[in-house]
Length: 273
Image 1 (cartoon, one colour):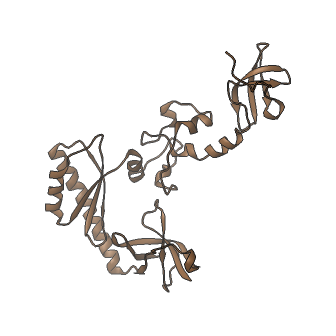
Image 2: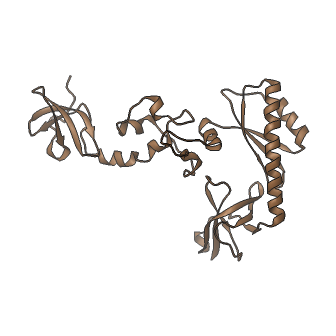
């Protein structure tokens, strides 16, 4: 058996599993853990659970210790360095007139590397900028180009719903969102209404997509010819939540019917022109 604990490094981030050994850990404890990038400080987000060895994640990293006062001071000093690095890098970008925008700086716990995240419309030659940063901070430097959705997650803000954007709060990963999801829910395709602060499709379009797709699975699609209690007609609108479709009848009348009350004709309900 292994004692597994869940640790987060950012409030909006993913929870990672670590081997807690015999450490007496509880929720919200600050801990120092081993990662692929060396030591890091995180917060216990999931209580310790005993898991059989065969069910435990392979190559599980260890919790080294509960964070000490010295660890917290190191963390605070690193945050000061991050703020200084952000200001310095922003100034150098302006001086060199580079077509990029600095978004965030992250310093590794042992200061072995400082990662600068930026956005840009195109590829940027930042070799001279890297030289400036290495000369200033005397450590390994990584410049990482991120997308608009990652930028919104870091900067945060309020969505059109009035709440803080989902990517900065409840979402652990930024999954793909498509226009098909909006169409399936009969939403307006006006970009201003379905786009988030990042200018991309809102993440919340995906929340109910599977439910709508399941409800509409057995509904005739728009354009299909169906047989109704009032005669043949063509489906012109669907209402998944009510389980209804609006049909333009051959008589020229429009009528609403429950899905269970209509049938497809023998020809398969091909569209009529």
